[in-house]
Image (tube, rainbow, N blue to C red; front, side, top):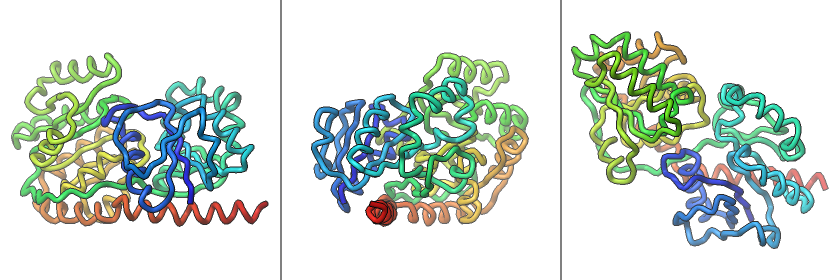
Amino acid sequence: MNILYITKLENSFSNGVTVAVLQLLNVIADYASVFWLDIGNISLNVNKKIKKVGMSNYMDFNYDIAVIEDPFNSITFCEIANNLNMKKVPYILSPHGCFHKVALKRKWLKKKIAINTIFRKYLNGCYGTQFLTENEQKNSINFNKSIIIPNGIEIKNTNIVPNRIKKMVFIGRKDVEHKGIDLLIEAVIRIKAELEKRECEIMLYGPTNKSKDDKYIIDRILSNDLENIVINKGAVFGNEKEDVLCTSDAYIQTSRHEGFPMSILEALTYGLPVLVTEGTNMTNIIKENNAGFVCGDNIDEIANMIKEAINCKNTNILSKNAKKLAQKYTWEEISKTTIKKYETIITEKKNER
């Protein structure tokens, strides 16, 4: 099977789409012939089996199927999709949460105009949309058929078994509205006394894209005397990131909308119980596998979730369940699932001819 992956990735490991796509390509290249067209021209090491192509030569090869990752990321995708259609190559849109109705509300007028004008033929011409979870599918706009294939993760050999939850960590882009950092800080303000009494900390690691996000976080921490509870840090990668996860008791993410967050999957591989909101699209999975704590996307429920976590006496069980859950999402298993679903699509398209 020849698969063409089309991307415009950021040259940053703080970007979830970049991390997810690169990890997938590196593994699925062991199971299929993978071609990669990245119009962002990032310089990152990948599996030597991956055939890199450019805008000047990508149409010189034959593909069974193509996948466009993060489809709103470039207008150039419209041209590429048109060429694929002319060559009768079915292509799939993989939105990574960008089709979510909450995400679409941001710059909604600009997106609405684009969807109905310059992106219209490109979006409607796809075979279908590849969602990460059923919840993402349910809460997103959809183009043609739907398939569901989750993100995967690289498993870590660690033995974290927290006795009690005192130190919680978030690692990712500190987009206040998207990641619900405002909800988290407001929840902390409501239960400040209890968190101080238990000597709890919530560590926020990552970059911010907007100065107003930096200002909000710093101002809310200082104006509410939260310096000893909410610790605002910069981005961490590699061994430093591993050290942060290995010295934490739980992972917390209070997003308003997501696809299938790599950050949460990674925390599970370390055996960290996770605290997540409905917007992360992972509450059902975490609840069903008893791997952490879940709540709605509002301040009161987040405050109650944190209180439940710091008062929990069974964190060792949650930790073991977290590691078991992570095993279900290895990139090897995700790659095999992906190929089976793509084989069905390819057969279906051949039968239509």
